[in-house]
Amino acid sequence: MTGVVLFIIYLLIDVSLYAPEFNRLAAENYSWFDYKSPLDMAIKQDGGLVVVLLIPIVFAILAFLIYRIYSKVELTVTDKRVYGVAKFGKRVDLPFDSISAVGTSAMKGIAVTTASGAIKFKFIKNRVAIHSAISKILVERQGKAKPVTTTTIKQEVPQSNADELKKYKELLDSGVISQEEFDAKKQQLLGL
Image (cartoon, rainbow, N blue to C red):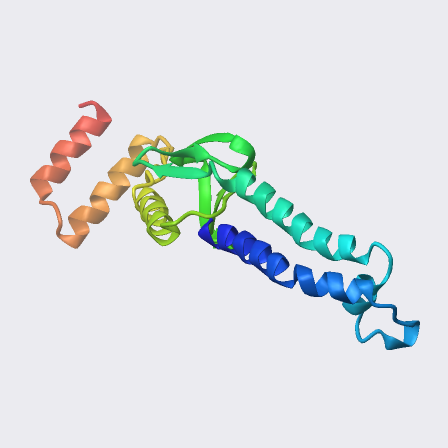
């Protein structure tokens, strides 16, 4: 904001230094062909001095309005939310769960993006620190995202006793189980 104030002071000094020169030029009588620039023409015509003086005043008013719009802007970052006051005094409170991205913008600004749009904070003095803090929290939140658990349901097809007995016979033939284990399982399956 100091830049805006310095610009206003510069305009006021500039106008006050050149006002006598503007009056002298306006008092002289020139023809249309003697104009050297549009500014010179505005000064030499009737009421030209008023136009020349109004331009810095309009710029000063615009600078003051911009200052008033953005003078109350503030931004606070915690580990749970981002809150503050945006332009025109609009209060903003954004939980980190709703923030999808953060970026920088012109005029020392920070843009916080949510699903409903971007909210811009202008003229933030420590925007680099705020941007890195929000980015760090967003990256940490992304890393801590709960893994999606999948439940697998395995359907087992009931096998007949003959299929079971065939399976155990193959195990006996391959030497995985002994003859006694096979006989015990056979008696169990056949209900003997």
